[in-house]
Length: 355
Image (cartoon, rainbow, N blue to C red):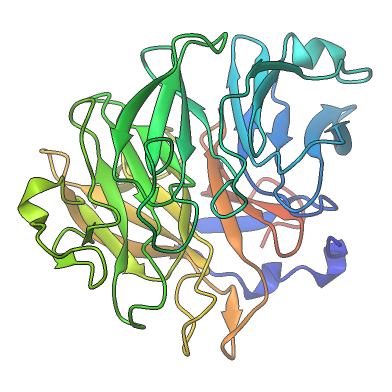
C-alpha cells in the first residue's frame, strides 16, 4: 500500500546545497519506472501490482489515475511520438495516442511476446535508442546460473516488435539504461550476484561500444573477478569490463544522462543513478541516488552521492527506483517503498511547500 503524503520521508531526504526536494505525486502502489509524454503526462510502471499510472496536470493541479490494469509486472515503460510502450514479464505492448485518450484509454496492444516467463529477474526496463529501436533486457533466470541463449542479454527490435535481435550478452540483470547524448553509446547498470561475499561483487556501470559485446556474466564479475563457480578456465580479459563500479549489492537500477539546463553545469551530461539498496548485507548500502561524472573519453571520473536519507538506523524509510529528467530540467525520483515520486529542482524555490 502506498504511504499517505504526511507519512512520506521528504523532510529526511538530503540533496546538495542549492537543490530543493518536494513530493511530486503520491498514492501509486509500487511506483517504479517513469517516462514523460509529449504533453507533460508522467507515466509510471509497477512491478508488484498490475497497474500503469498516469500523472496529469489538470486545472493547475496534478492528478493521478490508473491508465491500465490487469497487467503482469508492468515495470518497463518507453515513450515515442505519442505512443506508450509497456513491458510486462513476458511481452511488450503499446498504446497509441495515449495522451489524447487519458480519460478513456484503450487497452494495450501486444507487439512482442517472445520473452521468457522466468520470475527471477523477469521484470523489464525498456528504452528507445537513438537508432529508433526498442531495447529490452532479459536477465539471468536466477542468482548465478549458466543461462541459455535466451537469457543474460539485451535485445533490440523495431518499434512494431519486428526484427528482434540480441544486442549484447553477458548481462546478469539490468534495470536501467540510457544513451550518452554526445557519443550515442548505451550505458547500463547491472546488478552483481549474491551470496559470494558482502564486499564483492560490486554492481556495474557498463558502456556498449559495439553490438555483440559480452560483459562477462556469469563468468567474470565486476570486470576483474572470476566467478568461483563458473569462472574456471575463463579470463576476464575476454570480456568487456565496466566503466564504473557502483558498490556491492546496492541494486543500481534506473539511470539517466542529465541534459537539462536547470542544474549547475557540473552536472551536464553526468549520469544520475538510483540505487534501490541492498537486501542481504549486514549494513545496508545504497538506498540513494548517486551521480556518475564522466571523463571526456566516456569513462567514469567519479561517483558522488546526490540524494540521501532513505536509510535510517539501518532500516529503509524509502527505496528509490528510477530517475527522470523533465523537460523543464527538474528531476523526478520514484520510490516504490512508499508509492511516491519526488521532484528535485535547483535554485530559488518556486513551488509552495518545497523543502
